[in-house]
Image 1: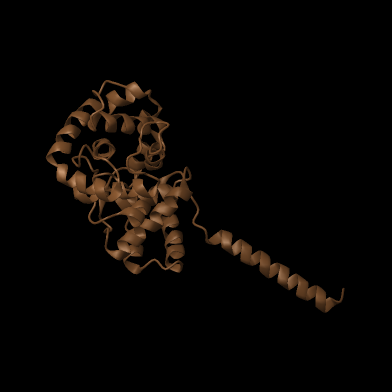
Image 2: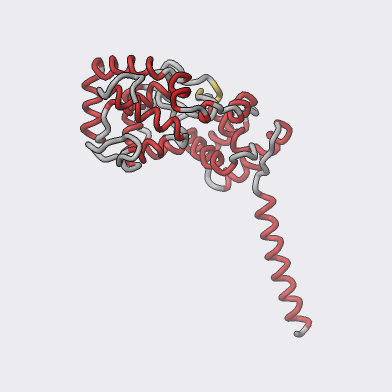
Amino acid sequence: MSKRRAMITFTFTAATLLAACGGVAQAAQCGSSPAGFEAWKREFSEEARAKGVGGTAISALMQTNYASATIAADRGQRSFSLSLDQFLVKRGAAAIVARGRQLKQSQAAMFASIEQRYGVPPGPLIAIWGMESAFGSQRGNQHMLSSIATLAYDCRRPEFFTDQLYAALKLVDRGILSGNTRGSMHGEVGQTQFMPKNILAYGVGNLDVAANALTSTANFLRANGWKAGAGYQPGEPNFAAIEAWNAAGVYQKAIALMGRQIDGGGSAAAR
């Protein structure tokens, strides 16, 4: 090989390696304590700006704080390891079913309209509404963007929450959410507790309004395979849509059971 050809080969190889290393260096590094959060925000903001995230959202991101309460909650989700009986008691299933039946009657026109459009009956929607926010009374008071940014920085599930953070930043840029929006521990917002990616994909209007939140939830379920008139208990066609809503098996079974009871299929204790 001639000196000239060897030099060209070396230069090309070195440039390729530098480019590869540069790509790695540009990725914001996850962490497991508050110590690296500020540096991570600066790195992530540069990446986000390069991907087209606007100044309003970048400014909101830079004002976030490390959410220690969110990390504690993320590490302590013990209720999903309970038996179905224990989970139903802990989550107040009997009260949800009783209140849900009342709401099904008092808001009959709204639920009929939703079912006509999306094919989802009142029961599972009301069960999700009650489970997620106690019918809108417990929507969370955490700083939404700080919660999601902290989880995107945390090394436990950075890929999932990085996607959620980019979605949240888009929502802030579009004015759908603000940098001061409040939500639950993992960044869920609204009466049925939507994560940012699902707001982008399925959200209909202001999710702090019950009708919008329930419509959005029905929209999500239909998009995930819900078929009008089909059953939604475990093993039935629509149960897969409930599985898409929440990954915890005990939660899925609880929603199916409470939904059936609200729709007229027995008492809160019956299974």
